[in-house]
Image 1 (cartoon, rainbow, N blue to C red):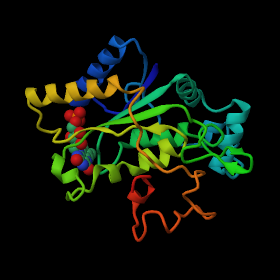
Image 2: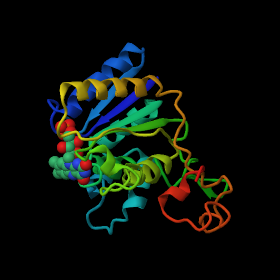
Image 3: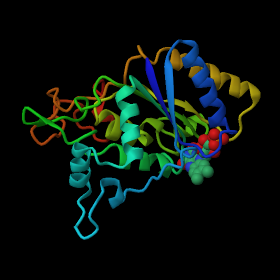
Length: 255
Ligand SMILES: Cc1cc2nc3c(=O)[nH]c(=O)nc-3n(C[C@H](O)[C@H](O)[C@H](O)COP(=O)(O)O)c2cc1C
């Protein structure tokens, strides 16, 4: 498999850096080809601006339309086009980051903002229906988040004070990865990441290795497909499904 590894941590001599090296070692040992976007290492610009689209500064900028046009013309800025090329090449994408303020670091959010442009990652219509939520244009690719979190495991569990990690990751996993059509594998999370003993590290490295061994075969999170019949014409979940329940969990088919 071709694996694209997006690394969003400023320091390679960190827990995250060590896990990345271990992950690459495992994947390459399995015969996969790995390419990396080390966002800090690349000096990735996370901020959308008119230059991304060769924009005329005299004109009012509608970002979605401008990026779609620039994508169609092949005039998106070079760093964005390079990420598109890597994404086209990839069968699987690993997104690795430390949990910062309940989410991904800004540099990674800015990777999505600039790379997942209209026409490339969303906004494509087929047979009158917009392709998204399971049917998006990146369909056929797999994705997995690898996340370190300072919070101890129980505090990011279903009733933990920090909120359930699956819900914290919903914007990334459902809103970006599944929205654009990828099959999203359950995340690999290392909790308690600010105090890691050598034994803890060995356990985390072994766990990551296990998850990477099944990157091509593991069952994805059973998010409901937009066009699979579970949603009505307004894209609201049908009342007979997960009745009387609300919140992000209702978008899991098993709920
Ligand atoms: C700016 C910042 C915000 C953070 N926010 C959170 C958070 O919301 N939840 C959490 O569990 N840990 C949080 N942490 C702790 C980091 O997740 C933790 O330090 C990191 O995952 C450890 O891995 P590393 O050594 O590779 O950086 C935060 C750390 C920083 C620096």
